[in-house]
Each structure stands twice: as C-alpha cells, then as structure tokens.
Length: 310
Figure 1 (cartoon, rainbow, N blue to C red):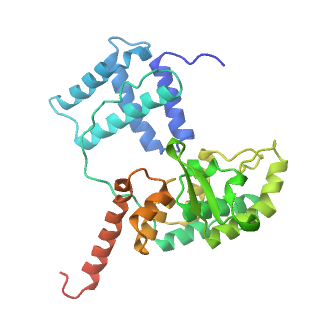
Figure 2 (figure 1 turned 135 degrees about the horizontal axis):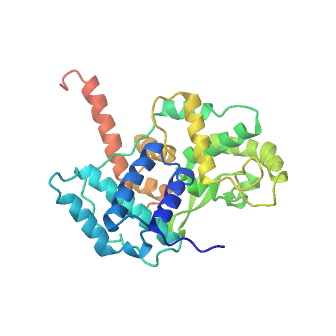
Figure 3 (figure 1 turned 90 degrees about the vertical axis):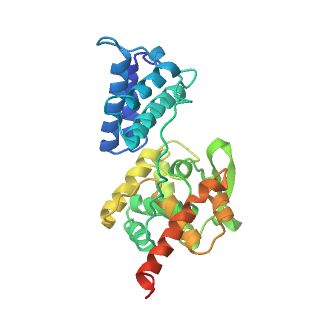
C-alpha cells in the first residue's frame, strides 16, 4: 500500500471524501467543513503551496481558534463550535489513518452551546418509514429487516452492519436477542421484538442465501446485492431512500431510529437505566437527554389540552 501523503491539503480531500461516502454527511455540512479547514490551512501557511501535516500542532490550532475569537468581528459561538468540530474531525481522521501519532486537537476547547435535543420520529413516522420498505424484491426484503432491527434494538448503524448471523441468539434459531458490540468493544445483549424477528426470518430464509451465493463466503448478517457485507454508507442510503419514499417531510439521519427507539421506550414508561443498557451508553447522563425530550412533549400536550394551562 502506498504511503499516505503528508500534505495536509491532500489529506483534507481524503477527509472530505470520507465524510461524504463513509459518514453520509450532507453536501451542506461537507461544504462548511471545507471552508473551515481551508481557512485553517491558509492561516497556517505563510504562502500558497503544500502545508505539511506537522503544521497541525496543539499550539497552532489553539492560536487559530484564539484568532477567531479575538477578531474585530469575532465569529458567533455556534460558528466557532462548528469550526472546532471540523478541526477535531479532521485530526481524528488523520489519527485513525495513522498519519498522525497523536491528536493535536485533543485539548481544543469549543464554546458551550445550549443542549440540542435529539430529533426523534413520531410513531406514525416510524411506521411509514418501515412500510416504505414493503415489497417482494430481494433488496426490499433485506431493507425491511435492516430498518426493523435498527428500530427494534436502538443499535447504531455501524453496529448493525457489523453483525454476523451468529450474533442472533434464541431458541431453535429464532432471533429473540441480538449480541451487539458497541463502543470500546463493550458487548450487550438486546431483545428483538416480534416485528423485527418476522422480518429477519423472512430475510434469512428467502434473501440472504441468494445474496450469499453472489459473493464470497462471509458470516455477515446483512449483505449487499453482490454478496459482500453491507457497508455503513449503503445502510445510510437505504434509510434515506426509504425516508424519501415515505414522504415524511422531516430530515432523517442514520441515528433517527436510535433516537426514536429511546424516546418511545421512555414515553412508554421504561426506566432510564434500562434504556441506558439497551443503548450501550457508558453513563446514564448520556441517556437522560431523552428524558428532556419526553418532558417537553408532555408539556406541549398539557399546554394545548388543559383548559386552564394558558
């Protein structure tokens, strides 16, 4: 394998392609990150030309963000937070790729912003999304199983595409539970509801054997149309295509079904610590953000329904 280029500008192009293809980020987000990072590299370079990766040090990154804060017209907090996020994403990518040995943005401080609540779909929107995968085609049967499992377990898209057939656990081959490997290699066992079990059974019996014959032997649960393990990007495209067919009228992200899973469980009376375990959160504080969502929903219903609420 050829050595990765040390030119930070060349690495920037690789990072932006990664955002588009692997992470499924919108064209708007990628364009904003491009502007932010090109401004950073221009700030680091005294003249036009290649900027070496070694230029990305904690000191130079801190100086760049301080300059943004101290300009005659300093950038807004939300804009600065996005710029810091772009820098962290870029250096984190270089670290994962082995281009950098340490992350120069590890201690970069972003301004604190008001907490953003996760966007969950309503139950009706989830049902429309899942119904949009109905059909007899191989891809539709697979897609229905994929989306049903995502909503049934609250697993991340990356976790679901990493599943193998042997990760389905149950009596007599029934997928009653799924073994999910989360962040930090932490394993959790998550129950699978009846709708997802039925969709998985149909996929495993009718579709996966045919897809498997098209490629090399693989233990992967979800396969692409050529028989290889379904990629995270392909799974994201499946979700986006289903959302477009369902005409939901709202933005659907790879995490939408995960957010909806957590929100609907809490609305149904589930204990927050149970939801924490199901999601694989290391801290209950991360899960408690969903309690804000349900509390806000309850307050809205109260204000619109109670005769003396206003």
